[in-house]
Image (cartoon, rainbow, N blue to C red; front, top):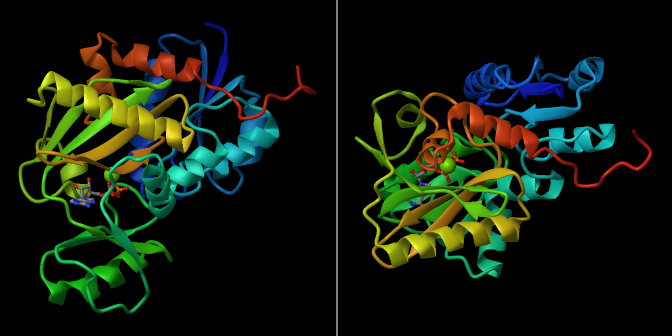
Length: 302
Ligand SMILES: Nc1ncnc2c1ncn2[C@@H]1O[C@H](COP(=O)(O)OP(=O)(O)O)[C@@H](O)[C@H]1O
Ligand SMILES: [Mg+2]
């Protein structure tokens, strides 16, 4: 196909390494369908780099700050270049766990209760709890506090990565993730770390976590989970591809977050889920590239 595609990857966030892998995988796959694919490493000079490529479409493969949070999306809006994933507001809302949880609550989607944490806080609001930077990803700065004495250290750790930190009630259950493409839920995946919780190491080291397409959920429960994922996607105003993460107990699926630029590495979950529907990696990447759009179509540009 003749469309000129620019894959934006790398970037300046704590998830740079993951993004380098995602971006490279995406570009390799796109080159099988499109003849003109350029990889651009995001830095402070990103706008001029993209302008030099003059792409028809940008595929955003950036995770974390300056990439998944609405900032690059805003830049591309002002440049009038369609991009993949969610728009400016949806990216910003889902990237901030406090805002996302408020949207979940408003839409009637269960989410664990939480409090905002102040620097230097020493007393855990609930135990066990999960202390996390509000605007990060890849479990960076996330700690599970099982003992009140571990709280202060967890707070200190989270503040290293963001000025906004939350403490959330720990939910004991199974972790389930549901990709949603253009409003339609893909098959869920049960994420089962062999040891501990789904931290950075368990996310990115092959063999440390089992990813199961056979969730063992009844048909009814599966339908409930899919509808909740689609509802969360819709309530946050997402488009293109996003992934909604849950922790499921016997009775309730608690939404914990929405990722608007899900990983596309060898161990990533979107390709795995899409595979169950018969999509190859190339096909799902092409589908995502073709979903590129703008919040506001430019009328002054050809
Ligand atoms: N409320 C919770 N109860 C139990 N485990 C949690 C909870 N919140 C997060 N976790 C664990 O921490 C991991 C990272 O938390 P998450 O909110 O998804 O942040 P990130 O954006 O860094 O992925 C989750 O994948 C899960 O394993
Ligand atoms: Mg997560």
